[in-house]
Length: 235
Image 1: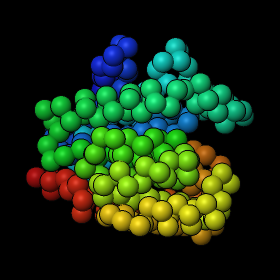
Image 2 (image 1 turned 45 degrees about the vertical axis):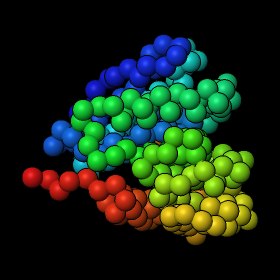
Image 3 (image 1 turned 30 degrees about the horizontal axis):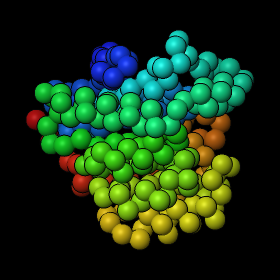
Image 4 (image 1 turned 180 degrees about the vertical axis):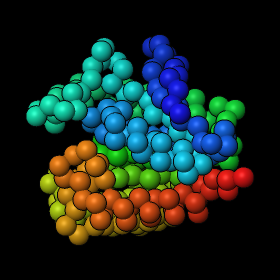
């Protein structure tokens, strides 16, 4: 079950969504959205993580743009989303994500640490957040802004897992290779690539969805979390 919550920021409350595991407590995961917002897909992934034993918090990162939201069924959904994300101030959004991580860590239900998982826009944001806030783990799916953030790589010291498709329309294979070389230079980093998979291959509501790559990446994600941020076994 998902519950609405508010995350306090210096500029007021940021709306967010909280999922609890069946046990009522567990390690925390901050789930950072794609450019489409806290979409049906993001909510489904949050529910999947809660079912695996995690307390999941997904903040509405477009909250500063007023009543902004994307019509998921519209033909121009990508254009809508790009118009919204282009209005965000990056440092302020990083600060909002940091406030959400602080909120998550402070919940009574969170036991055993707190990590970050992000998709596309959220994957890059999570990488930046991991450089300044030291979560316990980071999982990034095709972080679209990571190529411009590689100078932060030495500051990302938590165990991390990165997923990239090798047929990504937005991050070409040479760039993916450069990211892998930079991130794998030190620390506890896992880097997984998926031949033939395009951008947003995990999003089952998006035309670029790749079911095989999605299933493999999700299985690897759950294995990584079980190793680095384990949830207690169900009673």
